[in-house]
Amino acid sequence: MITLTHRYRIYPDATQEQTLIEWMEICRGAYNFALREIKDWCDSRKCFIDRCSIEKEYILSCELKFPNEVYQLNNLPKAKIEFPKLGEVPSQVLQQAVKQLHRSWEYFQDRGFGFPRFKKHGQFKSLLFPQFKESPVTNLHIKLPKIGAIPINLHRPIPTGFVVKQVRILRKADKWYASIALQSDVTVPDPVPHGHPVGVDIGLEKFLATSDGVLIKPPKFFKQLQGKLKLLQRRLARLQKRSKNYEKQRLLVQGLHHKIDNTRKDFHFKQAHALCDSGDMIFMEDLDYRTSARGMFGKHMLDAGFGQFRTIVKYVCWKRGKFFAEVDAKGTSQECPECGGLVKKDSSVRVHSCSHCGYQTDRDVAAGQNIRNRGIVLISTVGQTGMETACAVDLPGTDESQSRQVAKSRNRVTRKSKV
Image 1: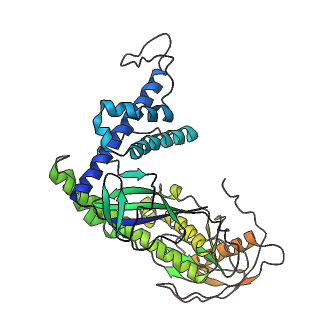
Image 2: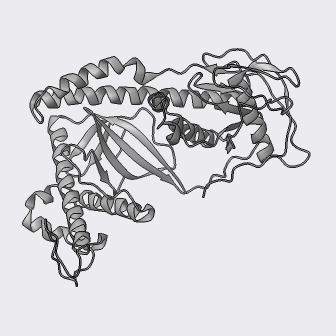
Image 3: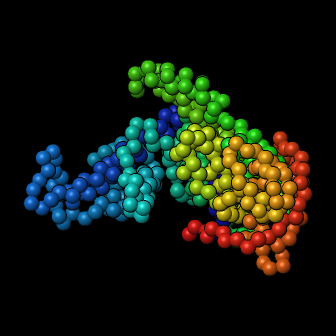
């Protein structure tokens, strides 16, 4: 069973757009009401037996059971009688808002922190249509219950053999999208190690450096538009909240953030496909970039989006039948890829020069070669470790490699995969 998600741009008219916005607000109210029931039940179990709180006290019957998902879903028909506004939204869409709350509650229960929060005005930005009798997508429109046909830009057709399982309508700034989940009852094996290996080192000095000598400069999408964003946010702070001018300015700020996000993601996908063009096995470092994002270079780390890039590379490799793996990142920049000797250097030194064997190359390229070597050791068996590297010069913005060496295997302990 394969599940794919394709996102398309849709263009609802003024009436349809206003209806979708009203449905989101109704679902937000149902979400907040269900969360209020959960919080009241939890607070009623916090009070001491022998005394009451000075500020407030939640007094509920001790026989009252926890308002779980089934209980709240069964109360929706009764709530529609008391609040007729709930009947305007399709019943399954309203149920998905309550289910979304309980997915958050289960997530909170699993990790022990992150209690669900109330949704403020405008924070509920999606509607999920979980079931369709027949495919709602045509070449020109997507048909939704109680809404009708909405024009859609089907920039890539629905793959043959896939059926539409559910549709999520998203609102980002002043733009609307349809995220369509597709399923097909086929089994696709995971890619196996084969072909030319490529080690990828990513960083702030160079966004991407491969073991073949490819160097890509960081585009810095957020930094380029930071001045314009600062101006728009300053204007927004001077307006009265919830006024018409405030909403117009808020959409401008959201639109700029959305533009930065789209350009960054487009760059990541293009580089991921370029990596798959240059090799058959892609190896990257097993790092937690959230830790680095809390440091002094946090803004630049978040601007580069290294975690998103690694996720996209992994997805593109699976889609194109390329092998992807993560290796231990410890000491990749302090080791010689040719002889394995230790070459200590701080961040200011951008050239790797080995005093043991005399090998010299760019620091980031050497790190990529170490990543490639560790990846080969990770997947190889005895007697199958030697592979010859090749030069890849077809990536955009690439420089020709100055080294063509044979990857030498060394026994190393790699980090265990996370369960």
